[in-house]
Image: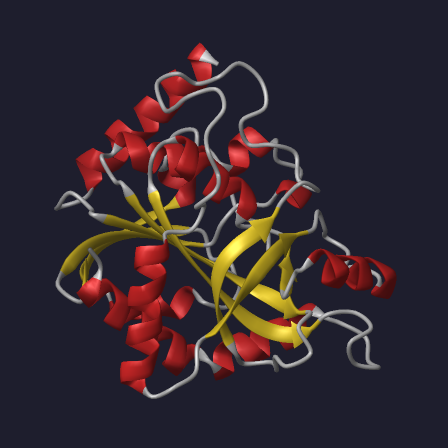
Length: 274
């Protein structure tokens, strides 16, 4: 674990030396949501391959660039592509970037994802504010010796997603004239889509959407005392909700369809973030 912290510190120092301003908000962009970075001004792009100790993305829709600059007048650092446990990465590697953000002095995290809708009132193209998550199917991002440099051994998760930031997100959506759904996000290991039986079980447990990311990053962020806001793009209905097979192309197509609303929402959130 000492080696892990050493590598994270080395990575943070490298990034700090490449960017122009100290970021206030870190943004993790999920499948197909990367075009948000086109709204960032005074940009510095850093390819993941250039960053020491950084994992590499292998999934379509995750370009693999760190983008620093100004969004809605606020300095941000955005990940255009994230890392997944199903890619073969240890869960500590999945959470690595979040810990680097903390070492950069960032205490605010906006995490986004593409998700399958479980709630039958949802439809593809909806945006969902994550109010909580179900993550006990995921290996813990805190497994192993505690990283005392970041947080306590047993962090409280009763407010994994900031209620105050959630209110800002809801007001931002209202001001832009569209309905922001709200619900519980469930983690599934992937990369296969869930079975209809698994989706029925998650529905009984109270999940409104399901995906293969986000939870490890959020746990690492909360362990480090960061405030978190989560938004899911409902790109498809989960297995068994509709009588049709699932595919990643549909995910990408729907993310493209909601790009305008998603971008407008995030920009308005960042303006009012506090």
